[in-house]
Amino acid sequence: MIGGGGTGGHIFPALAIAQEIRKRKPDAQLLFVGAKGRMEMTKVPEAGYEIVGLPIAGLQRKLSPENLSLPLKVFSSVQQAVGLVRKFRPHVIIGVGGYASFPLLLAAMVLNVPYLIQEQNSFAGLTNRLLSKRAKSICVAFPGMDRFFSGQKIRLTGNPVRPDLTQNHISQFDALMHFGLQPGKPTLLVMGGSLGARTINQAVAASLFSWKNAGFQLIWQTGNSFAEKAKALLAKDYYPGFITMPFIKEMAEAYAAADLVVSRAGALSVAEICICGKASILIPSPNVAEDHQTKNALSLVKEDAALMISDSEAEAGLDAMVKDLLMQTETLDTLAMNAHKLAKPDATEMIVNQVLKIAAA
Image (cartoon, rainbow, N blue to C red):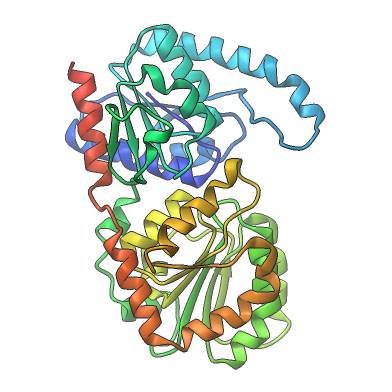
């Protein structure tokens, strides 16, 4: 059983783990557990796996009436998770983080079912910290995680990324052709995470005319909430080589086409940028627990593998930062090379090694 979700940063690693298990053990039975109404309830079935949704929800950081119903949702979710575990009788349970993994891992602990935790970020999430003591193994993506977990259980594996990225042999020329873009023009990929990012979208909107005049091309993932506004902005004028979409399915082609990536600093985005060996400007989200995206970004910045700009400065400063960097091919090459050095392409295999070891014990 695999529990977790809420954002692509939890869902796509879970799917990569499931694919590797299925590859090695074609007859393995897999069941995902997520949160009702969240994106895992569509993304997991689209990938061909069964999922059960629980009524669990996250704690709102601002005062909200939704927090009043949270204890009831947690209690109901744990009850349902215990029932699911008793019925499915898994050999091992995998928690990939996010509040959706809490009921399942707690059920595993109560029923004495072995479980593994996969922590994607450089600052461990609350669920994983609370439930780590009974975990058989804790797979992490960043060094120094012994400040959160028992050092004996930690395995530095890196983060699983989609197989189409680890096995990406698409040339930049072919990737540009795929999107109908021109070779030889500086190309920028902007993405705000699987749910979109308002600050990044507003910064891009403010920079469109400037980037057009500089001769750049743009692949812009907006998320659903900004999609119509982005289309309207591009329709107002002639923007050759500027394309926008709510969600990019062909991420291997998007990364291959790009000379520079602008992104949030979620753990999955950071892992993908490193795997693909791309220069990047990271804009950490301020709306995450313990400011973990800043810590993720700094892990690259200190290795000269990325640049960073704060969310509060992005709208005013992103335009000049992008123009300056896209004109410096040597700097782009250095950032890309150093990012690639930090990649852990065997992350999924290493995690599944641990899963199968636990299942066989």
